[in-house]
Amino acid sequence: MGSQSDTPLKKKGKIPWYVYFGGSVIYTALGGWLLEESSLLAVVCILSAPVGFFFAWRAWKQDRENAS
Image (tube, rainbow, N blue to C red; front, top):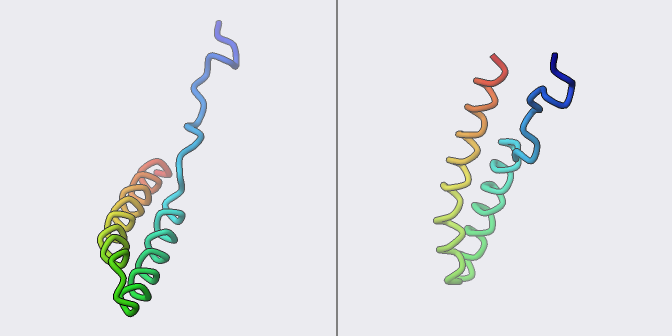
């Protein structure tokens, strides 16, 4: 006989996909603004934004699979 403490819990601390998506949008906008200012930091933002979109897509896909 198992107790309630033996049951597996949902994984907490998982970042939702929309947080990744929001961060990617912010990085894209910031990169565009900094590119207009001819800042070297714009390159970092422009290169980081697609990584965030990838993580958002992967987290969204995982959420969709877990909901099924």
